Amino acid sequence: MKKYDLVVLGGGPGGTPVAMEYAGMNPNKSVAIIDIKGKLGGECLFDGCIPSKIMKITSHYISELKRVEELGIEIKESDYKNIWETIKKRKKEILSKRTNGAYEKLVSFGNIELLEGKGKFNSENTILVGEKEIEFERCVIATGSKPFIPPFKGNGVDKVWTNQIFFEKMEFPKSLTIIGDGPIAIEFAQILSTLGSKITLIGMADSILTMMDDEFSKIILDRLKENKNVEVILGAMAQEINYSENEFEIIYTKENEKRSVKSERVLVATGRVANVEDLNLEKVQVAYNKTGIHADNHLSTTNKRIYANGDVVSEFPKFAHTATYGSHVIAKNLHLEHNFSKANFDHNSWVLFSEPNIAIAGITEKEAKKRGIDILTATYDYRIDAKLQVDGYKIGYLKFIVNKKDLKIIGIAIALNDANAIGGEAALIVANGITLKDLTETIHPHPTYSEAFTVLAKQMFGKLMKEKMDNPVIKTLLKIERKL
Image 1: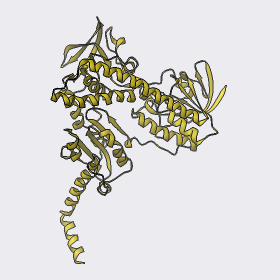
Image 2 (image 1 turned 180 degrees about the horizontal axis):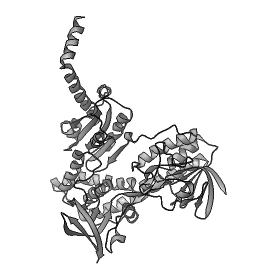
Image 3 (image 1 turned 60 degrees about the vertical axis):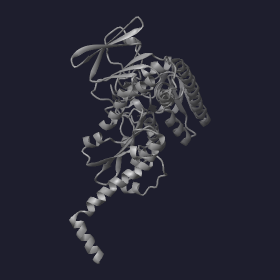
Image 4 (image 1 turned 135 degrees about the vertical axis):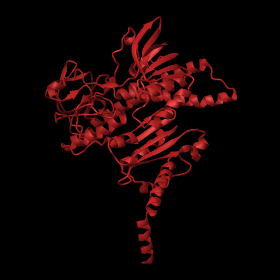
């Protein structure tokens, strides 16, 4: 039986980076990554953020091209078919390039092995990979998550798509019903509708994207409602999915009334569940429930020799880049053989690749109020912005959430076609505890979208200073100071 100093379950962004970072810091240690596909990349690369963004960039160019329709130039249906074939080709090429590149990097370390198969614990210090048993000193569980399909009735449930199935098949639907109102549902709705698919979106809540502040979710909802290829049905509960004669019928209730819609395909995007089944976590005393593995802020489990990272962890933000951040936390703790490093998800950031993009860094106004934090908020309307006017876009907003106690910017939200390009600066501002005053002293280039950060900071800080200067006590003190 071969023994490894570190075994990582999962070759995605929650597993591969921790294996590589630890192997680099400890060249004399042996490391193994176990992945069910035997390839590096995980859900993000094969079934999530990368293939969806390959579709997204094409749909973005199509939406830009549609501007020429105003000049009488028409995009034909045959053009869309060619476009879809190009998307499929690019997906295959880019995914292959990225996973092969990751493997080449892994091999270069010289002390990491990639084992193909589904790993599961067999004893307190052994793991089965197929029929092969290996021994580990320490372990990281990064098995990710999978799409959750509610217990719908009907004979069509086993034929629905999830994001995984969609990217495996890469079939373009002429009409598609999407059940869900979160990021995956919204991205698919906008991308596929732009490419020519007729979309019906069924959401359970009365709004969409409930994890962000209302004014930003409304921007996307309004854009969806303007799209002639999209029908939005909110406050509805899908109950039954039937299939006959190459067509789905989705039965749902809205306002206590049963209704139905038909489409060629159905995509279910109603959330995700942690991949914990068949891991035999009981054999290593790792606590978990239906939401995932329990881990502390060091990302250590109830078994101190075992860490967990990414989507498989309960309450962990479900983003690939956050899992990569968690990998760094774990790698440092493994290297030091002590839990010094902690994860701080208040510094998390993410982007919804919608039209326009929504970029979020830190916490939202909703979350701040929920925690009872005394905050200041203000917004900047990009319609007055030179860069927006030059680019010809019609909408854009920037919002700051500021802790009133110390004027640190604890949250930033951006609605902008290129919000993904400046979301990183927003993340730096939040993560480094930048204050309004700090930001007023930053010199941004002009004309750019990022200069709005300084403009908004000056507006907020200037208003605070004026209120302070208008205080009678302060006025009196200033008069005394001048005389002295």
